[in-house]
Length: 94
Image 1: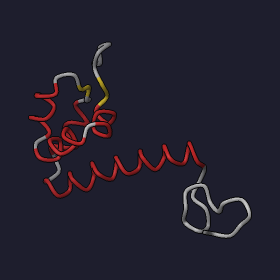
Image 2: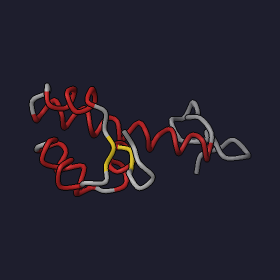
Image 3: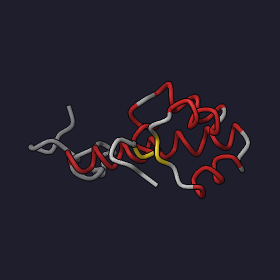
């Protein structure tokens, strides 16, 4: 259960690259050493049930998705040209 000072696991994972790598290497140790991270038993079990390469792909995928959603919220969707926000006004790519 989260208290007023705990940080959700994915917030810490996105914001702290050292924690992210520690979480990939050894989730239980990373969470124990962080102390202030809130993770449900299901989240911990999910991470522990993966081998390190699977965990790395999963964790980095979550971080990538969160960054992409943040960019889309700020700048709009991905345009037909593959760029965030689409073509610049005027229509021609630089």
